[in-house]
Every structure is written in structure tokens, then in C-alpha cells.
Image (cartoon, rainbow, N blue to C red):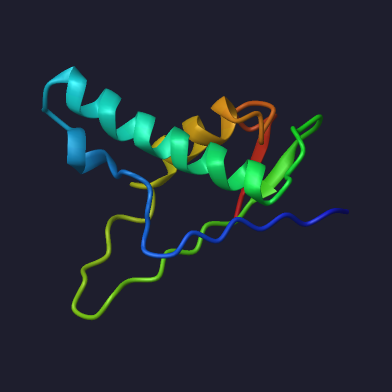
Length: 99
């Protein structure tokens, strides 16, 4: 089993409450930023496209006095970005296992 790591300092994926109830363009902009970030780091780390189900682990490190978000909040945008970069086959239970 191959293990691939993407470590991005001082970044976290957009969380649902950042765009909840806001104009569609806000959501689109935030998700595009996440897609671009994941795509760049996937290329930089030479991570191949997924051909089968992958297991994903997400670790967010908070800064001093920074509040955490709901556990499921960053996953939507992150999974969409991973799918867009072909790092997962699909963002459903057949394509990805979340840790």
C-alpha cells in the first residue's frame, strides 16, 4: 500500500459555514481556491491519479487561540478538490474512506 502525504502549512479547506447562506459566487470562489491549492501540492508531491478507493486522513492544526470547526465542516470542499485533482476516484463511500 502506498502512502501519499500532502502537508500544507498555514492553510485549511473552506468550511461550510463560510459560504452557508451566502451568494453562490462566494462558495465558488472558496472552492476554487481549495481546488487550486490541492492540485498544486499534488503535482509538487508527485501524487499519481487514483485508480481505486483511497483512504483519506485530514489533520488540521489550529493556531494559538484559533477555534476549531465542526468535525465534518472541512470535508465537503476538500473532497471536491481531491476529486477535481483525480486524487480520489469519487467522493462517495465507494471511492473514499475517511479516517
